[in-house]
Length: 287
Image 1 (cartoon, rainbow, N blue to C red):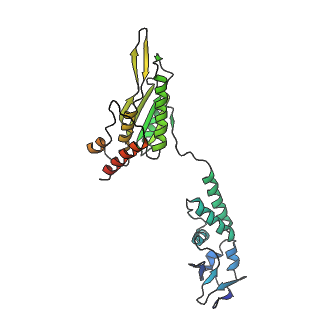
Image 2 (image 1 turned 180 degrees about the vertical axis):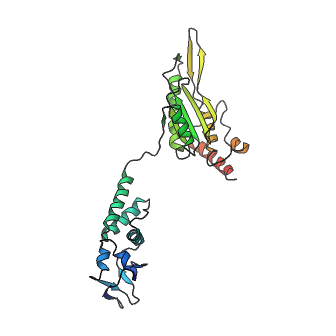
Image 3 (image 1 turned 120 degrees about the vertical axis):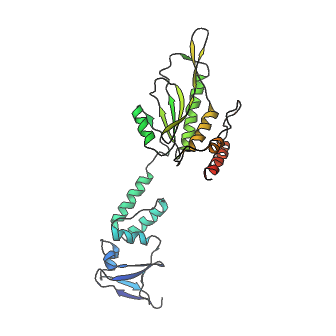
């Protein structure tokens, strides 16, 4: 193009140069560009000709989207990397072009970590009362704990108890997957005096409990009855969500907004019901 010339860039490390990288403009020193053993050092060491326009901008025929990241790495020896894998791959491509090997290694390590399988939901298994207290005190989230402990049963189970115990476990799994980013869920399998019980904590304090077992008397001996109070568990889970990022106990209006699912025929049978209820709670929380 008219006005473009080839020239050799010379000067001490404090000299500033103007770069036009694919239309993106940068202003930096020769010292920054030659700090590491890269292609840019070769370009600005006075050994190679570079292309400049009529206004003195040094032209580099590359995409300038991530050149600032490359430049900042040369300045500081480190740089914050984006979360998106696509952006990481784009920066990696540029780092390889400019032969910035330390940046290449940094990005490849970040990509390897990102590709490793990380569980999206973690549920701690409580092994002692001390550990439970530590977990509750160490989180800013509300807490839901399920006690599930069959080995201490002194009596035989009623006919539906096994099924109901499994239903409680399935509901716990469903809730923990749905709300794990907002609530800390934990399982307790060491308590000796409970078989199946839900406990809800807000701001480190116990707020509610839903016991799922009772003793019934047969003709010959006592039996343990395990129930599945699905509606009550959902209600208390919605209640405990009100303790997110709050310094005081939720007011009566907020608490009332989560209730209404405890009738004889009540129950949660669709996620849409829960979403509608959560939307109402969140609207009230923002008031």
